[in-house]
Length: 210
Ligand code: AMP
Figure 1 (cartoon, rainbow, N blue to C red):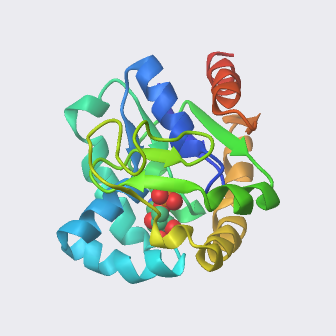
Figure 2 (spheres, rainbow, N blue to C red):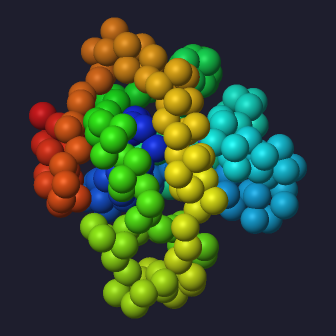
């Protein structure tokens, strides 16, 4: 099954994508994680992306589409995948269609902006493997250390309050129109994000299986 997880930054789509990919044994493909990796490694895509990411803007479509195309061509994506954070614009969705990628379901995790702003201040990410945590809702076992790989867990520059505001504005302007795009194709299911991650996961799995 090929799926897209849609939602405002901080709505928890990455966390839910990790849960569902374990359940279904398919990879969760996060363009945000791939771009952060590219920035860290100083690749041409990373150099093109860094300034946009730090400002809370979207990275140009051609850069992201190139990265995504290479990733979904890999062997582990043959039996299905979850796209986390892609597409983020209607033109990226059209690019997926042009590539001939069949999408079975688009899961929107819906959380109001006020809740997101409050949540984002506690969000942390592993510098090593990109796993995501939250100091309140999903803490690491040892403070500041990733449970999965032992690397340092930090706050992303773009999770700072001013940048979060910009990212939410970008989401409403450029990404939210995708809800209509996929609803018109009969693919959209909406899950109301809950306080408890496990509760949202139950609803998400039910929405996928339903
Ligand atoms: P994320 O981890 O999904 O919140 O992504 C972090 C940042 O990476 C975003 O704020 C964008 O700057 C960039 N990014 C990730 N995915 C995309 C995409 N599909 N299109 C454009 N920019 C993206």
